[in-house]
Image: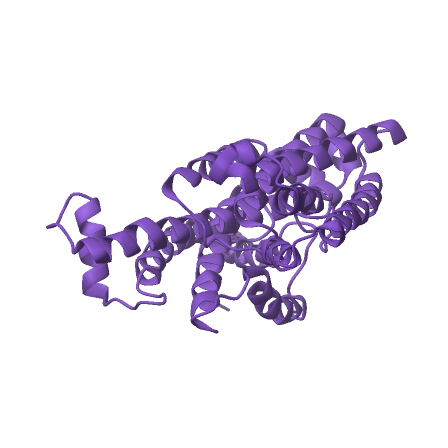
Length: 373
């Protein structure tokens, strides 16, 4: 008979239980480390992609020529060729930066919208903000409104239209009894159709034959007219939106689990929904004002980010922002080279790429929208 050392039986009973929890702890530690590491990788990829994107265009430059321009403006190199500098730094660089900003903004607003209405098919344009912006932009193109704004006329008109649509949707939902997911979806869909009809009527009544083409190109999105002074406002809006949403991340997790669960945890659901509504509307309005309507980014990227880091908003928001930025930057590059010397609207490229990507993501068995993975 084997001799049993005192305490050995207790150790045999304890070790299996202890070892069974080790993989779980390891996965939790790995996930905590994985998110910052993934974020840093995406930032590095975005920076490298930005520099590479400067080489693409109607005139191609080598990476050495582009890097010379970039180092000169960062204070670490000799003066570049003036012709190369004018094209690379004054035209392509603000365009690439705006693509990064808009991609991040649309992805973050998509996360906010899907949490607000608790619907995996929700995108940033669900509340009719984009349709309202199209009314303002169409009025500028067809009627010459806001012409006193100069180069800011189109963006200013679109922003006014977006804010008007936001105020209308908010007023309708409040009058109906308060902000709820069902009221927001129904009001947004109905008013979006109404705003789109108004924009179409303005195009129909326009005496200029090219108005329809200009309006259609704007509605499908582009960052071609980017300038350095036009990236400050959207950059500030995106940074502010991400910071506020990150500070509310625990409340957003509770709301994603359901309003009853959130209320039981002490979350003021009504106030949180109002805050999400206005933050999301401000993000979308600012992005649409500078780039037009670009679809699929705010729908697909949040789901892709959930697959990478799960549903906790403290991890989801920064990863979605970085992924959306890189994605839209390369979409802009593809729009420049696919049909050169003409440019394809960004919404066309995102639609072609986004639809199969979304279907592929939804086909994965381990993907869950609700709850934490």
